[in-house]
Amino acid sequence: MPDQPRDPDDHEAHSDVSGGLASRVLLDREHATATKMYRPPLVVKVLYWLAFQAPFPYVRNEPSLQAAKARRTIASLMTKFWFGTDHVAQTLDIRCDDKGCIFVTQLIEGQVPKDKKRARAFLRKLTPLFQEVGLPTWQVLAMNPKATGNLIETPDGSYKIIDLESGVVNPMMPIGQWIDAIKAGLIPVFDDVFVAKTRKYIEEHRDEIEAALGPEGLRELEGATDEYQDCAEVWQKSELRIWGRLLQLVLKAGSVIVKPLRRA
Image (tube, rainbow, N blue to C red):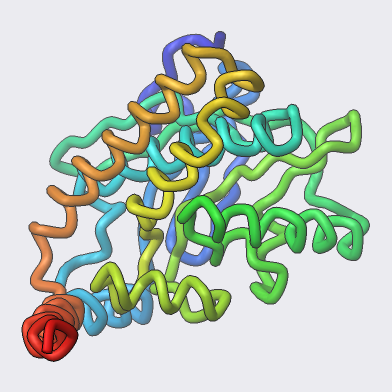
């Protein structure tokens, strides 16, 4: 188990620095941690504001990061169920202060996949499974040109997902997920877990999941699903989300109109 992560200011000088479109990551090999600080550029802030009429969440919105932690736990347990191996770097800590929030995960030793064809084959296998269980797919979508950069190839040749948190509003999804998003009233989409689908999957595969993960693993999976739903609700209620709310109103109005017609 890694030592308690240091404050970023304390170890930045002794860490390797990495990052993506919206974040800066300090890699602390001594403590086996990767500390992510979100510093999105203007274009990312503007796109998120246009989509949800709110600041980019992972900078200061702690419930959004707690939801991200729960989402990683769901993905971790599901990959263990599907493949017999946990393919997700775990969240170790979340801390917020007046400077913003940090998101600390396991540091996975290895390298960015050199064999891109093999890495994309893994992603193509993973994407429909994520879709089936209601997990967001943008970060593992083979059509995402940056998706292989979200993987680390470990010395034994297996892959670990090190980044499940998007830097942009999800621009591309399988058609089935667009349908899921519309039904849930979650348009535009940003790292959303379609919880109803997750619960249905767990219920349909309960015995198999319990056999593979044990009773404790099943309870952890159900608990992470509950935690994601609770945290996502707090996070999303703090944003205007005009387009999603309009969609929900349209869906409700359509339901009111269609129900009497079905009874006639």
